Length: 171
Image (cartoon, rainbow, N blue to C red):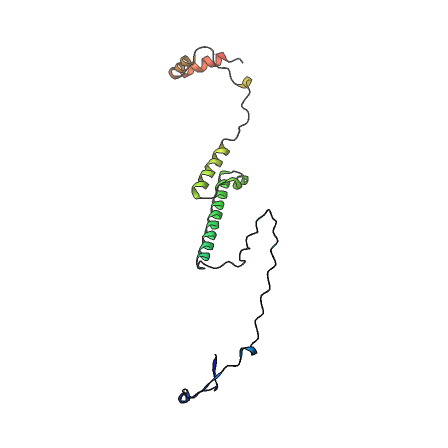
């Protein structure tokens, strides 16, 4: 049985004098509606029922201070990559290499960039040279002695060596 005070405002010295009267009957309160039954979910007999959809708003379990730190780390990494790209471009321009090489370099770390630049420099230095002089344009090797004898003659008497070579050449 619910009891409610009959007085609305109480004076502090009258707090003990108030009288309690029974509350009105429960019939005057509105009744809560009954929940509607859920229809059965359609599912194929061969497939199991789908898992419930995840909550569209994820719960924030972790403190929000990690998000700015993560964002800062990502921005610093992106800035480091841009600095490496700038260094690589300057290096290639100093060597006279084409900018077409830039997308093929590794910017993940300073060491990786240094290795990529070494490879690019070596590859540019090893560029295919044009064909050499045709064999007919080369002077004929002197036939007057063996290589060892010619080397010894060149060391001992260079003038005699030149005379011998000039006698050997036609013309």
